[in-house]
Every structure is written in C-alpha cells, then in structure tokens.
Amino acid sequence: MKVNLERLPESRVQLEIEVEPERLERSLDAAYKRLVPTLRIPGFRPGKAPRRIVEQMVGRQRLIHEALDALVPAVYSEAIESEAIDPVDQPELDILETEPVRFKATVSVRPTITLGDYHSIRIAPEPVEVTEEMFEEQMELIRRRFATLVPVERGAEWDDILTADIQGTVEETPFVQDEDAEFPLREGQRLFLPDLAEQFLGMEAESEKTVELPVPEDFPEQFANKTATLTLTVKAVKEEELPEEDDELAQQVNAEEFDTIDELKERVRTDLLETLQRQADEAYRLKVVDELVGLSEVEFPQVLLDREIDDIIRESHGSDVRAYQAHLAQIGKSTEEYREMFREPGQQRLFRSLVLGELTSAEGIEVNDEDVAEQMEKMLEPLGENAESMRAMFESDRGSANIRNSLLTDKTLARLQEIAETPVEEETE
Image (cartoon, rainbow, N blue to C red; front, side, top):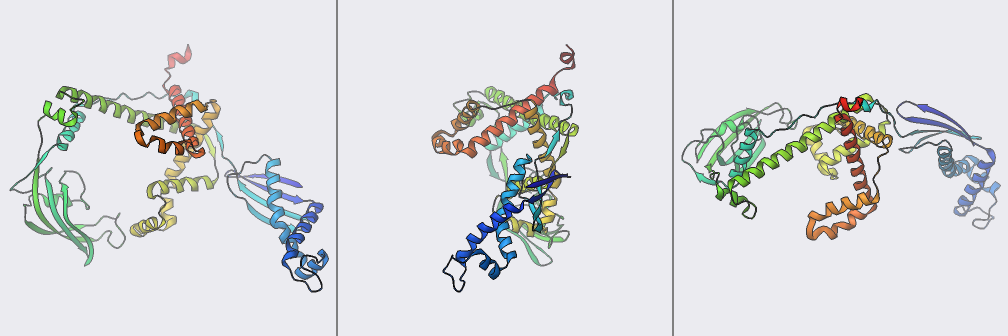
C-alpha cells in the first residue's frame, strides 16, 4: 500500500492511496466467495461455479466493485493508523482507478491549537457590592410573596393585578384570544406587544376599549410589521397590600430559620452577595478565557462548528423535531437561515472549548477517580430519597465522563484565573 498525504486548510487531510495488485486479487477472491452463493448459474450447483464463470456472468467490474466495498474501508483504516491521523468525521472517498486500485480519502481531523503567552494574561477582578437599591428590591419581592390582593374601585395603576380578556386581529385574521388572563401591570415590562401595558392604565373593572398597536418584526411573517386591532376587557383591578417589614414577616418566610426581621435581612444581604460574587466570577472567567482565545491560533474543521450549532439548537428546542419545524415556520426562517443565526455564538463556544482543552494539556491538569466519586456524592446528596435511583445514571460511563469533563473544565478555569489574578509584584519576586 502506497500513501501520499497532503494537509488541507480547515484541519483536513487528503490521502491518496494505491493498493498493491496482490491485495486486490485476494479481495476479488473474497468478493467472488460472497457473491457466488447468491447466483443461479446453469450447469453448476449453487455456490459451486468457478470464479472465471462468475466473472463472465456478472462482469469483472461488478466483481471489482464488490471487492472495493470491503477493501477500501479496510485500507483507509490502515492508512490513517500508519500516518497517525486522528479523524473527527467520516471520510469523503473518491475512487480514481480500479486496476490498480487508487483512491482519495479526504477527512476532517482534530483542530490545531497554538496557545499564546497565557502566562502574561493579567486582568483585575472587579469588586462586587450589594447596593441599597438591590437590597430593597429583594425585600420588596419577599413582601410581594406574602401580599394580599384587594379589589379597588379606581382606574388601573402600575403594580396592580388585573384580570382581563384580550382579543385581537390583524387584517381580520385572528391574532390573539386570551380570556380571564391574570397579570401584574409592571412598568417597563412588555405585555405581548410593546405599549400594550400602557393601554390598561386608567381602565376600571367592567370597562372595555379597542386600540390599535404595531406588531414587531419578531412575530410570524403573516403578522410582522402590520397593525393589530385589540379589544381589551378589564374584569377586575386589584392592588397588592404588602406586609410590613417586621418579625412576623420573617417568621412567615421561615419560622424555623428566622425569629426577627434583622435575621432575615442579614440572610438576604448574604445571599445577594453570594449571587453577585458567583455571577462576577463567571463573567470574569469568560473574560479571561476570551483573552486567551484572542492570544491563540485555532484551525478547526467545519464539522465541529456544525456540531456546536446542533448542540445550541438542541439546548434551545430539545429533540422534538415537529416543535422545531413549527418554530421555524412561526418565525419565517429556513433551517439554513436559522442555523446561520448561531454561527457566531457557536464559533465563540467552540473556540473557548478548544483553547481550554489545550490549556488543560499544557498545564498537565488531571482529574482522578477519587475526584469523580467525591463530586458524584456531592451531586447525589441534595436528591434525598431519589439519590439511589439516580446513582446508576451518574455511575454510567457517560455520567462519570460528564462529571470528569466538568471537573477538568473547573480546574482549568481555576488555574487560568489564578494566572490572571497574579499581582505583578509576585511575578517579579
């Protein structure tokens, strides 16, 4: 077997392979043995006709093609092993000649990643702070959880709770029909259409009015950029009576944890700070990773980007093909147009994943079986009675691989963050 290898752009290689005549002959003989039992040849018992008779009957080219069906995949596998090729997809095969057998195999291979000088990355983390506005907003949300709804005899105002019917058409085509909808009237929040919430302001219970509003371009094509005629019927207007910020409220939230309002407020501030810090850490790590991506050179095959786009769409729509097709029809986009929307975020995700994987290798970061077992127990602990039923899934090859990969990513991100946060004075000591 002779192999000529040529490296192509976008992490592809092309192998031109020539098979020695003796091997073709052996494959032809094997093909004859597979084929002869299926033939009925006058003068011969089934499966007993000699090869020359079979060739005369079916033609040498038919026998050669039968032989190539088994020969080409076997020879290709040997060639990529001998050339140390690591494919990430099935090859494109092109038969050049049949005697002697010569064919081309073009295949995508693993990306080539060259990390930049990541040890030079320095990004200062931004401090987090719980502002009084954040705290008051959180306390108001808690109070709203225990609010009492009281009917009012006045026009609707912001933060009231309405019960209403909404019916609408666009050019006499039914557009919306929602009966007995109950919703809060929040300033700045969109109700189905922009400016719809404002139309309810001042409306009293048992009142009705008709309005016309523009339909945004993100609606289905048959409605987008047209005018909707809506009939609004308000059935009830209620306002929230919020409880006082006192010890009674704290005990309503959790009597076992909080005796006083001060204890509740302290927990609210602590939880807010932890949430802000977690969000800041995630944003910081992404910033550092993107800095690493900017320093690195990445050559990748298109098939990996296609798979990344597949993953993004699957995460958004699940595996329900009908629901996905219905969504495309609703927004008026073809499959190709919709996939193109995710090309840039898909490439960003792919680059981050590839450079992090390369950094894992460069830093010699590993996760052992004990790490995986410990993390598994941490994940099972909150599940209570369901823990044992979930254990089998976590302990499966796929489950443990997912845990291992997640831990590797966390360790790699932590190492990169450690580098980026290293003060300059430590570096020079």
